[in-house]
Amino acid sequence: MVNLIVCGICGKMGRRIATLVLQSGKFKLVGATEGLPDCIGKDVGVVLGGAPINIKVSEKLSDCINEGDCVIDFTNCKSTLENVRCACENKKSIVVGTTGCDNDFVEQIKKLSVMCPIVMTPNMSLGVNILFEIVKETARYLGSDFDVEIIEMHHRAKKDAPSGTALKLGQKAAEGLGINFEQNAKFSRFGEALRAKNEIGIMALRGGDVVGEHTVIFAGDAERIEITHKASSRDVFAKGALKAALWVVDKLPGFYDMNDVLGIKSK
Ligand SMILES: NC(=O)C1=CN([C@@H]2O[C@H](COP(=O)(O)OP(=O)(O)OC[C@H]3O[C@@H](n4cnc5c(N)ncnc54)[C@H](OP(=O)(O)O)[C@@H]3O)[C@@H](O)[C@H]2O)C=CC1
Ligand SMILES: O=C(O)C1=N[C@H](C(=O)O)C[C@H](O)C1
Image (cartoon, rainbow, N blue to C red; front, side, top):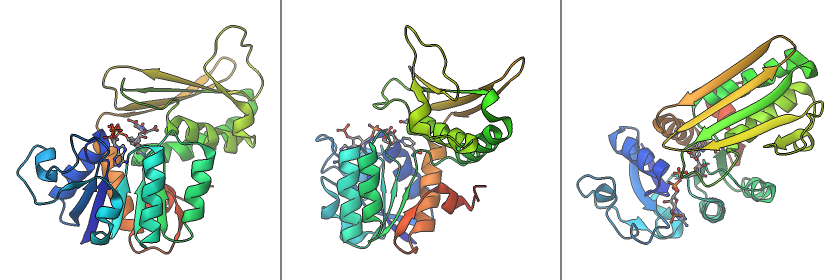
């Protein structure tokens, strides 16, 4: 049984993770945190729409960290960094799903991972993690005669763009092509925009309640490959996060991703 703390319990992902945890025989929910003032101090069971379970929503991870073995964090960059620091200083493991953070954030998380095991990935679904590898391999086979374009669509409440997943898909395509992603990424187009060789285009659409959709297009002369992943429920991410928590809880300090959790060997 893994004693789990969920950060961002009143958010879209936090709610689904905590609900699945309460239905699972492998986890015990021992703590939760939230930034929303209306949610802090409430009973977690009530927050999730059920009966009280005698666990209160804390304002800070340091208020409940002693109870847990592992933390799952889907919040925002500032809060995630504080939570990773707190987990590592207390020798706990942590799974991070937060996206939209800059390179400096990633470097700081990597530095902290010398103290505790951290799984961090922009997408915890099995399908997308397979897609990452398919995209890398497809780019490698097709080479630079095929133009790579990435389109993502998410719900109207998503705060960051493009999605962390779209960025990682771009990185995977760049790896397959043997080029630098940052130097070749082209975010949206407007006005004069003749396509450069090796450009990797990334477009973000927002609207409605779309859970998460990503399409990678390889456009050649007279033929085109389009590979799409559509998530129709946040449970695919929540189940991936729980799989990561079960995996990471007894690991040595280090920085891990879903390939480690799922046993995917990137070629
Ligand atoms: N890796 C993956 O598989 C996935 C990643 N994500 C990413 O996860 C993140 C969260 O997504 P989602 O759940 O949809 O977003 P939400 O905005 O619905 O939830 C985030 C929650 O975290 C809360 N929060 C803010 N500050 C703190 C704090 N200091 N302590 C605790 N909680 C805090 C927010 O409160 P407030 O509203 O007050 O800020 C909010 O309730 C995003 O970056 C998203 O892109 C999402 C789905 C899958
Ligand atoms: O904010 C979301 O909802 C999602 N965010 C992740 C991302 O930015 O890649 C993953 C998923 O597509 C849902």
